[in-house]
Length: 351
Image (tube, rainbow, N blue to C red; front, top):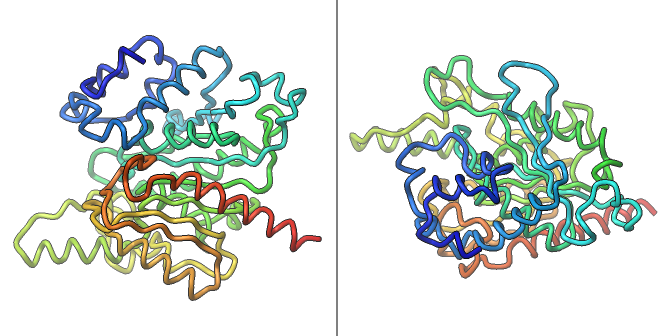
């Protein structure tokens, strides 16, 4: 890893030959200013770049298939892909997974964030996948459909939710090939990706609507679940004479969105007692997603009696990835422990 340093830019990183097969999934649809920023800008240590790139290097070197199209056809669905990350041990081999005793493990499906305009795949997808691999769990990173430019009529939603459902169907169909079991999976996500993951538990757009089994847990990093809070922020900016960026809300609800129309995708309005258990982490100084989104989610989980663990820190900002060296350092291990506890409790109730 001598070639990649904190001074390496995103563009330079994606040009490295040793990472080439996965480099298109590091950062998608980025603007030129972002492309030219060094990795230290995002927190080289905090986000776990070195650890993640070592894992990616090993995956690429293994020569095994890593990228899977979620759909077989559809012009706007070509970009929807799964990146498969098997656990570190045993040896990376799709054919040897059963002989090694690794078949039938619960998997985690990870949704990177990016305001539904792009995916911060390295920081908010592959990094968590690498850490989960180290903990012994198979991981999939989902690259769902996004929309970059206006007009947003019709809106992007619910296409990303359809992609999530299609990805789970694909994993279930090929569970034996991947060495995973269909039950007890987790869905994780960050920011808008955490909104997508949280949607998977809702009454109106969740797993039940698609006739699929629900997850054992949702693992959410700074989830943007409340459209009301984003609408409030836009209104407040208007009162102050400031221009608010409402592209995120337009992607959810179209160019002529209203507070009421957006609520179709406000997770807190569509939860019931069948909502999956949740691990949530966020920081109070997040400048992008109000920490109030996490608090609103926590409040609803309490009201409904849904098991949850909340790891809310004073400082750490947004897009902290693995959060190494921050107040939430170790959150992936905590989240994995919570997920496994939910699996054990479910198994105990079934006896």
